[in-house]
Image 1 (cartoon, rainbow, N blue to C red):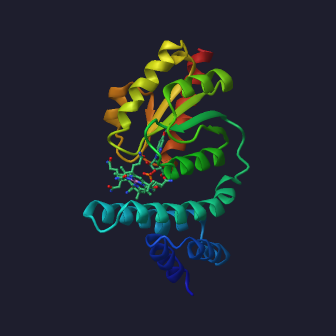
Image 2: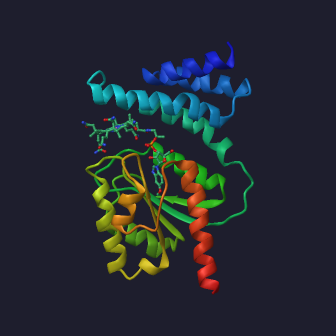
Image 3: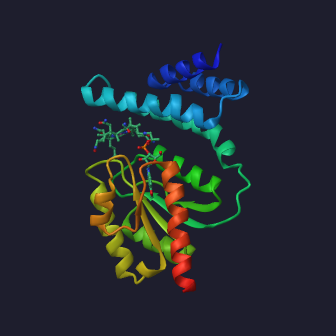
Length: 221
Ligand code: B1M
């Protein structure tokens, strides 16, 4: 099979949620010299975008979305060590979580992976994270940055109560707050009072490093 054919088959099998096949093909692609980035951006992510489009059209339902998501997550497990193994110097601690009411985690996990690859220590609180849980974790881990992911228009308003809870606990000055997720925009992040926003995992890593650099320069005076 050529690499082109492998990518096409990963796309097709992710679309129908054939997890064992997606895992085998991903391994085959890596053996054939495809990079983790190519596998992600040219096969796996486009397949999930198509799943979303079919769901919107009413051609797919929640179970189809679920099995495609599981196939993607299994491939991501295979790619994660390769994306992280960059030997990057430790730059800071990033506390991450998907907001309350939202169970999507694939995109968040990908952001985690890219951050770890760039040298961040990531503490991930998982999905459906309540404002109080973020506050407790900040007190416990003293992260440099706190990141909220939201993937639904109905859950992105949770950024506000999260930020308010952090303010109420007197911790707002201690942390940089970043937000992201498919429906989120820079304008929305600004209105919510976040310090930073990014559209995807690569941009999130870049923005996190920039914000940290700005903060450290400010502290040094
Ligand atoms: Co859901 N879902 N889903 N879903 N799902 C979407 C998000 C949707 C867009 C599909 C659609 O209609 N086209 C739609 C949301 C519409 C909206 O509100 N605008 C939707 C819906 C409606 C729902 C339900 C309500 C369906 C229902 O029950 N009727 C339900 C909600 C459940 C809940 O959370 N309460 C639901 C459930 C599910 C599953 C559980 C079946 C499954 C999730 C599996 C899982 O995550 N473990 C699922 C899936 C798989 C999807 C789609 C198909 C794929 C999501 C994905 O993983 N994308 C999705 C359609 C789509 O995205 N086009 C859809 C790939 C991922 C790499 O991209 O998530 O965008 P993304 O992550 C990016 C960026 O967002 C960014 O970087 C990531 C990596 O590049 N990013 C950050 C993320 N976090 C960041 C944080 C940052 C910065 C950047 O800083 C802190």
